[in-house]
Image (cartoon, rainbow, N blue to C red; front, side):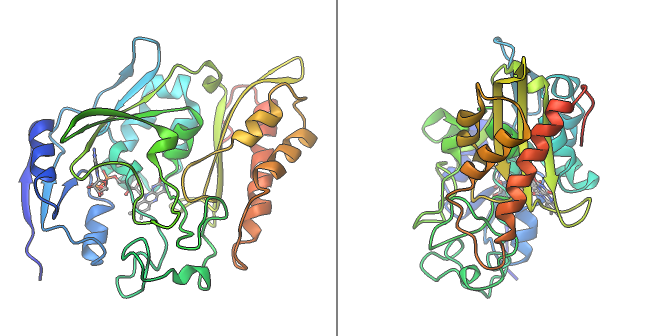
Length: 333
Ligand SMILES: Cc1cc2nc3c(=O)[nH]c(=O)nc-3n(C[C@H](O)[C@H](O)[C@H](O)COP(=O)(O)OP(=O)(O)OC[C@H]3O[C@@H](n4cnc5c(N)ncnc54)[C@H](O)[C@@H]3O)c2cc1C
């Protein structure tokens, strides 16, 4: 048995000081990732600093009409927010299509961004894994890799980023606000998630003890007409094989504005800029959507087991965009 000490922080500065001063300590929010991995002997904190009493639960508008979500707002609270439902349907859908109702009541937004990969080798403390134990190898490259990534992969790691809501947030240029040992910082969403490269153990740019305080989404009018489409092995309680967060505005048959990000197929929430660049100003039809999707997946590096994801991702993009073109305002999810 490993002893673990537990303390409860009541303000953010104390929480940051407690974790940053002790390399063996970690924050505890809803615990739906942290406690699982602690039990599985994958994470080994000696001290947990409970942050659930910090006043970081607000969901509201920013001065410029954007959305600000406190890091400790629960997934279910954010999904139920009238503001989110009306202005950012893709965020609501991504949240409601993730995990289970019970988990969504426990799980916080900050914890969701920092949840760990579902690669079975990472989660098996007996296996080698470059992400868990740098330099030991990646058995997934030659092993079981059906759920793994085809975009953003390296010779050191092919684990898929598991979050659904992070895909919607990537499409919307969200920013992550933090408080760390050296003060406040703001991270652009695309820079927040690191590609595995040759250091897959580094997943984000946070210092040890840097606390996520809020997630901010800029005002994005096109997001009112958006969706999150998730394809998975079963209809609920399952991670994505491929997913698409998309917001689309079409004027006179031409794509006027577009945001697209992919999930389930990449090592980080994948902003599909090639699709956006190709389609803005192009006719909004199946052919152009399919061409754009082919371009985005052109650099895919699948394994034998997950090669199906390349075609699945292309089709999911086309279906998401066609759904938005035909959408009358009802949620397609
Ligand atoms: C069975 C199951 C199914 C799931 N299915 C899905 C799914 O389909 N889609 C999906 O997106 N997710 C899914 N999840 C993941 C779930 O959404 C995450 O476990 C959850 O969001 C993590 O939030 P938490 O508050 O419980 O974080 P915790 O477990 O408390 O923390 C997770 C990590 O983040 C750190 N942390 C937490 N909050 C902060 C903060 N504010 N600042 C800095 N560090 C912080 C912790 O130290 C820890 O390392 C599933 C989880 C389970 C167990």
